[in-house]
Amino acid sequence: MKEKKGTGEDGVKIVNFEEINEEKIMYQWEALERPFQIRDRDYWITILTILILCGLILIIIKEFYFLLALVSAVFMYYVMSSTQPGVVQNKISNRGVYFGDKRYDWNTLERFWFGSEMGKEMVYFETIFKFPRQIALVVSPEDIEAVKRIAIKRIPLIASSPTFQDKFTKWLADKLPMENRVTDRAEKPLPPPNRS
Image 1 (cartoon, helix red, strand yellow):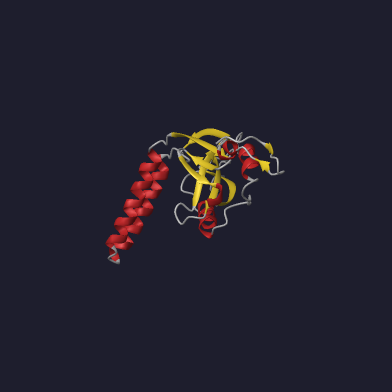
Image 2: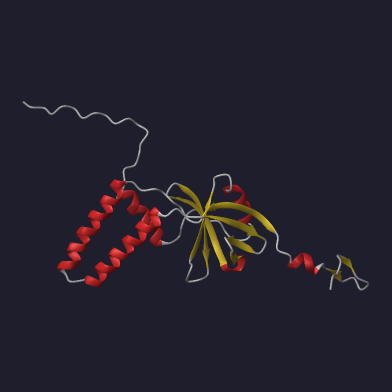
């Protein structure tokens, strides 16, 4: 039943129900499925050294299952770090946010914020679900303003991640870097030792 906009004889507004139910894509972009960064040899040697030291401690206190879980987690991280992610089509519509083919309705999203991970710009949407608690989409710097302009009309924007876990992880990564960070300034040579 197709109805037209306007007013009826009794003054009641008639609405076109097909337009209300129609989903409209407001913005879409292609991006990687997850942030990705190629790790160098020194990074993996550092990870392996930490794993061996933790493994020795766990063997001494006879925590073999915990050691097995730790080795499995490092192996999974290695596989994900060495396998390049695919490209996915992300969309924002009048009904929700799409991550590939999966749609998250606006009423299931609580808030959003922007951040960066592994050198990639990200937009994070916090959901009302236990899993997934957050949806992280890779965005290019050109897409940030468009995503912000659309999403801020539906859910609140916050400055950064509100969870303790995210703040602690960021602090730990800053204090304990696993790889060399390149700086713009030239390294100063060490002065010769003073032998008096």
